[in-house]
Length: 270
Image (tube, rainbow, N blue to C red; front, side, top):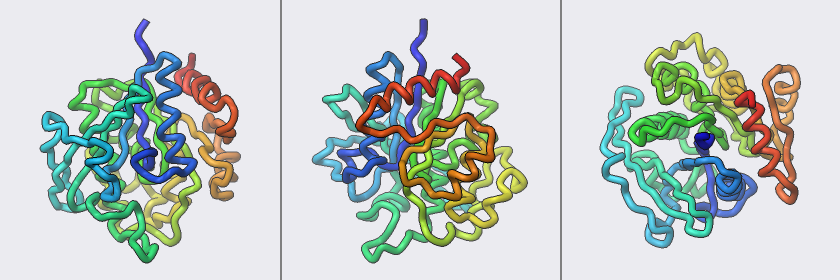
């Protein structure tokens, strides 16, 4: 019997970024799921504050070299990889000089939200899909963690659904404690249009605040996980009204990997 294939797309993974609940889940959940007999792939952005030499990142030439067009501008897609030896796990990094070479994650030194975070989210999501296509690896489930991966459910269901690699793929969105103030760029809903996606597919993103960004991700997902005990209360209320399959927050001191593993099977209909 073939192993279930699970693609993890995480905004943060330790040790590449400082330890947070999200980055620790990004690190230890894939390992735990792999140890339960699943096949995994893991992706994150190659933020400029990640030390490439210390973490032994290197470019994967055969996967790099494509250009992604965002807002009529070409942006080269660079793919790097590193190994977490203790977990027997590789991490793929989505890189681009324009978006990911500054020495910060989502905010500048003064704590100001980067103006191009909208385009960084678009590039990250599309970059993962294009790389997985080059890998010729068909995931049974995609698990997205953090709002920077919030376009993945939409792109799966509306842009990559005709690709045989993703025809039967389910997607789970993990809502984290990573809300941002204000809104993304006002033209976000125009910039993200791609393939067969229409403006009518993303009505909430006319006002791209954290709630609407998350709501859109939830609406296109097959399952939702509360990845933090401190999720935005409006999101929690929305999930209660929605009939989407969901998994409540799992204490990281408990058997959370087993709970996630069972939830993955539930989403797959097993």
